[in-house]
Amino acid sequence: MKKLLFLFIICIKLNLLYAQEMDTIPPYQKDSLHIPAFTVLKTDSTYTNDKAVPNDKPVVIIYFSPECGHCQITADEFSRKMKEMKDIFFVWVSYYSLPEVRDFAKKFNLQQFNNIIIARDENYAIPSYYRVKFTPFMALYNKAHHLIKTYPQGTDADTLIKLLKDE
Figure 1 (cartoon, one colour):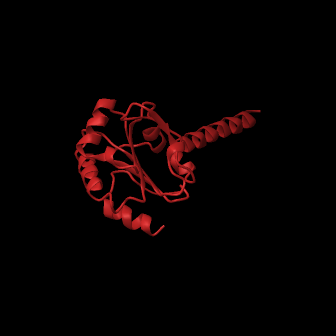
Figure 2 (cartoon, rainbow, N blue to C red):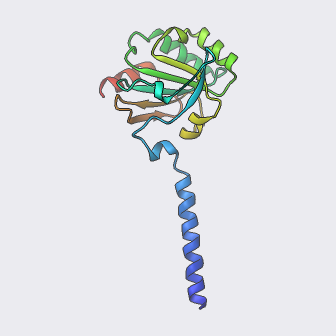
Figure 3 (cartoon, helix red, strand yellow):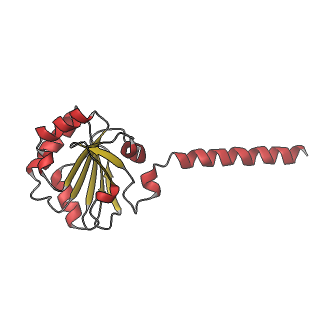
């Protein structure tokens, strides 16, 4: 009877360890064939969601902080190279307040491009899905919306252009 109880306890512990290990895998690594579901508040105070993302374009999801220097450099560079990236759809999201997100968009002229959604992620869906630790965080999806690559600390426009051109 003691042996049976001992085996039972070991099985329970192994199951708990396995369950804990499974929880350490970010959701995006469990489902790389879809863009995550999200609902965000755009700078014009309207809501949009993942259904607004075009089905026939590569997508880059960028989680940013308006105060982050690297995010500002990235926004400036991307704004200047948008002609080369006109066939890529961007979703820029932040948890910061809507006025701060709106000011960031204006500062880098992001609202002028029709291939960009810039918004506040009130539900913290994007950083939870990717388990973001640094900004800017970027997730690249091909035209079929399959995950190609993530950049936990962002990347430059030329790298995106080259990578998505090959897809």
